[in-house]
Image 1 (cartoon, rainbow, N blue to C red):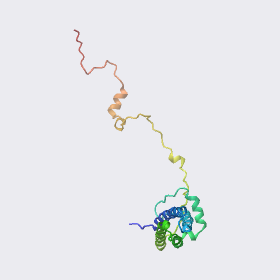
Image 2 (cartoon, rainbow, N blue to C red; image 1 turned 90 degrees about the horizontal axis):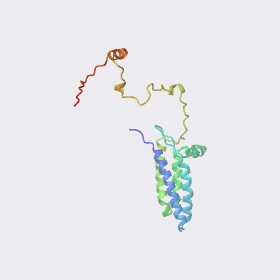
Image 3 (tube, helix red, strand yellow; image 1 turned 90 degrees about the vertical axis):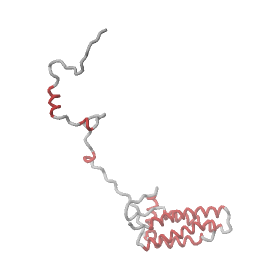
Length: 195
């Protein structure tokens, strides 16, 4: 059985927890909770986590489905180099970002999800995984001579395969001889009955 790539799971978990942090922060801030500033912090932290986690990393084996518009964020994430590529850094960063949001009931679910994502990133880092961007593959141009096939010699509608068989030598000889010069013989006897 193949190895599990834990970074893929951590990426999905962290992206979802960022959205949950944003939602909890909006509820806390709009509801004017007593510690609403933790809600405002959760909105900012959630947006940061979503921007960091939106670009998917390339898998070691197989193909990776790129998210819509990911190439723009990938360029930004690549600028920070080892800080965003290293999963130890991401694990610690997510754990530190989740702590202040844990002091408010509306954002505690986002805190728990982000802490779980941090643990999964730590596991991915221990197993030696690191973030690599999905690079677009250069398109291969089709060779003109290799793609053109011969057109069919018999236009549609074509008879079935058994009807397209070549005639045997006897049939070919009879067909080549053509009709004989005499009258044709009717195989069904015709009688004329006039009443």
